[in-house]
Image: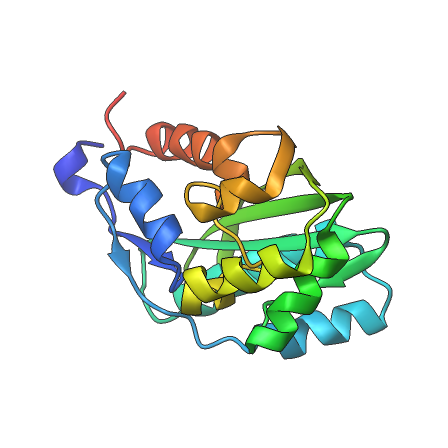
Length: 203
């Protein structure tokens, strides 16, 4: 299959970070937001005792598979990231108060980020992958948290841990164990390998 004959590639995500990762890696794709109630699906799985890894994987696949029915033959990428600390799975904060509570809970400890990606075509899952990273957060003073959130503004609400490693969030950490792209929310290198093997990128 030549590159010009390759099926279209669609990112089923509203994440600016994921879109920028693909764009910077030279991938040609379109962005379409999936109509999936992520929080409801996550809540149902947690009630059933699902692990953080299972939740991330299922959400990524659901986004990709749901959208793939509407775009025949396209390769649809779904991705999700779940933050887990001491058995608790966190959700994105909706308010500054919630963001403050999240950062207080992460302060002075280690948490795990699980980033999942799935590729679907015509309702069928072709490939899926989950990677994890461990993040150590330094002890955070309340005054720092307040200043940090004031500076970050609404950006605190579009990542599950209220931080972006590539920006101001770097000030929160003392150690990061894991792949950089995984921390940002997309296992990029395995996805690029899949794309090459299926003629979506040049060999």
